[in-house]
Amino acid sequence: MSLMHLGLYSLAMADREPSVHNDAVAWSDFDADEYWHINYSSVLPEDAEIIQCASKFLIEACGPPSHSKRAVDVGAGANLYPALLMLPWAEHIVFTEYAEPNIDWLAENLPDASGEWQWQPFWDLIADRACYRAVEQPRRRLAAVHEIRRVSIFDLPPRTWDLGSMFFVADGMTTDAAEFELAVRSFLNALKPGSPFMMAFMEGSSGYDVHGVRFPAVRVTPESLDALLTDLPVTGASVLRTDNSIRRVRHGYDAMLLVTGFITT
Image (cartoon, rainbow, N blue to C red):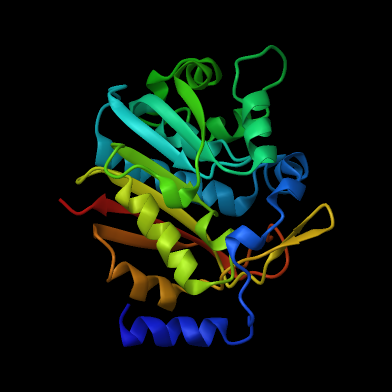
């Protein structure tokens, strides 16, 4: 890690001592249903902005829909829209998770079922776009191609997938900057050279509450993220900062940051 990189993180983390590491967090107390209700029971403006930008990136990066890529969504939790974004190109999508409540939530919500589909409003944002029009039944398609694996982000197999996403995971599991960076590197290392990827982070997060339980976060800033990206095996990286004048998902953060790019070949 460079001195500049360390300096930026030191400033961002100055008020967060002592660090809270991922293995010290009571993930068994995580209420996945409540997390979904807070964040995804309706389409929030920031997510809509990310979905539009991420879908544009994937259309340009992946080309015509092919159903040929092995995709991964790392630490998916109660958020299905990153997987929906990858659906036109995915032959198979692996959802990795470690927390049992999130695994249970995925097992309950990914199978095809009758009744209202809570993710239809998210799909509607991209349904008429090139490539996504080819997916006639996204709910059924996602149910058919998904697999749930219990695996730590730090134990992902290297160079395994052709397309990947990691949304609000590395920055929402620890307050330790080194552990955050290790998680980001592990995700990127799990993708094959040349693979497109998407990562999303909460800018300036001070942590978050789910059903009265406090969970940690790293204070990612555009400056610290730019410094980190220069030291990662990526090319063509682009950072989007969502409009922070719109209604926020929760107090205690500044905006969302979307990173898109390719793994270095």
